Length: 149
Image 1 (cartoon, one colour):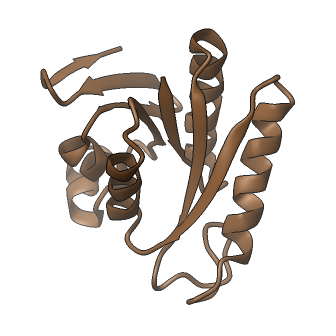
Image 2 (cartoon, rainbow, N blue to C red):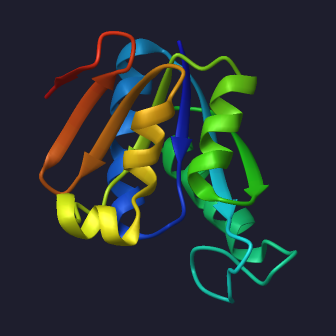
């Protein structure tokens, strides 16, 4: 199984990393950690400055270390652009079986107003997606349009 984990070191992506570690340990999955720097990123934890990715590289290394401490190995990648589009692009190019993303659990109204990376990924994913948040994780299989807890 090939597993793609979207990670940016913010609280909601920690849920994705934890869930990915659980799945990788149980399934012996081949894991790739992806951090995306948005075009308008400033020097925050989630990105870096436009055109550079100092924090994204650090975030990927942290996630790889987290998995390594649990006896799991992972590749790391940094992309630049719209997070949902870059996650989907990597998922298609890498022929992944599963994508794991975190959620801030914005709710339907706020999520539509502000946009939601997890919502966009689920909508257009070429494979199953697990959306992990504080209240748990849900698996969405786009081929059957089902949601399972």
